[in-house]
Image (cartoon, rainbow, N blue to C red):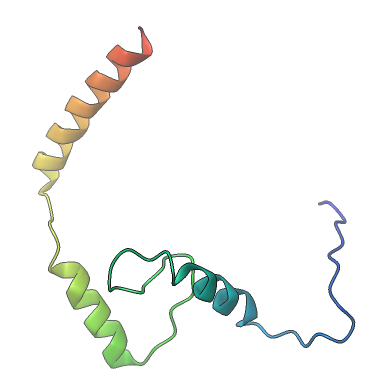
Length: 85
């Protein structure tokens, strides 16, 4: 393991949430949709917020295993054919 050192200001107070908050604030201007969820920022919430989050995910498009396998095989054939060009 490398022994890389990180420089931080001597008078700066550090907190566990600081990097996530800084990242989220920096990317709020570039968000294209009204949904501010970012997979790179930790999500802390109540049980009700988690359930709401899961229910929103479940409303999305889902494929059966057979449909997905068929789509994957088509993609794989196209990908391999392009690799040989």
